[in-house]
Every structure is written in structure tokens, then in C-alpha cells.
Length: 200
Image (cartoon, rainbow, N blue to C red; front, side, top):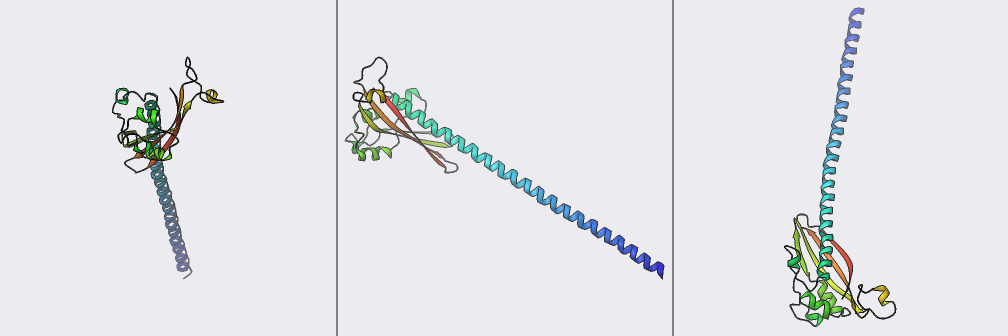
């Protein structure tokens, strides 16, 4: 009888060891599953974040390229930008609010528009002079004259020094150049602005 009782205890102990091993394996399996899922989740999120940063940088580069293009267009306002840049054409805008024609060229706007005319500035601000695509990115470039005047007067020549070899009777022009970039695949937009001084 004593033997049977000892055997029963021993077999019960063996059964308990097996159950403990099973519980241990299940706990470790659950922990590994959670760890694996976490690693997978963070890898996916990291890939998404990396893609987002790359698209942002590409949109930023395209938009800043619009600013550079706008500066070149203003510097060469009396030339055809199509002869300087392939795939770029200059729009004629409606400058009737500026006292000019409904199909105004950039050189006419630069020389004749009054920068103090608020209606003119608001109207021109809503019309892109240049539009171009760069891959999935569409960029509109807006050019608005904000200041003009002769280089004479106190502080004028210092603030807007004339070109070398020219006299101070030349005119200074200050333009606000705005580039608005759009990522057509995501709908994201970016706006960059710059001021550019032109002396004629």
C-alpha cells in the first residue's frame, strides 16, 4: 500500500513537471510572437517614414527649383525662357487690374506695373507666370513686383548698390517670387517664397 502511494506521488510530480514545461514553452512562444510582431511593426513604420521623408525632400527640391527658375526668369525678363530652359514656357497673365492688357507679358509687367497698387498685386499673386512638372511634382511660380524706384536719395544707393560701371540713376526693382509645389501622388503641397532685387 505504501508503495502504491509513493508511485502515485511520483507520477503526479512527473505530471506537474510536464505541465510546468508546457507553460514555460507557451510563455516564451507568446513573448517571441510579441517581439517578432513589434519588430515587424517598427520595420513597416520605419519604411513608411523613410518614404515620406524622401517624398518631402523631393517636393522641397522641386519647389526650391521653382524659386531658382523664377529668379532666372526675372533676371532675363526681356528674353524668351524657352530658349534658356527646355520644357519651360512663360505665361501671359491678365494684368488688366494693373492698367495693362488682359494678356500681359512679363517684361511689360516689370517695367510698367505700379507696385503700390494693391488690386494689381492681389491679381498678379493669383496667376502663375511659369508652370512646370518634375516627375510627380507640379510647380507654379508667381512673380510680384513689390518695389521700384531710382537709386538716388539717402540710403538708396547703399541699400540697392548700382551695378559696377553704371550710375545711380538706374532703377531698382524688388520682386517677391513664390513657388508652390504639389506632389500629385499624395496631394501634399509646399510653398516657398524669396525676395529678389533687380537693377536695370
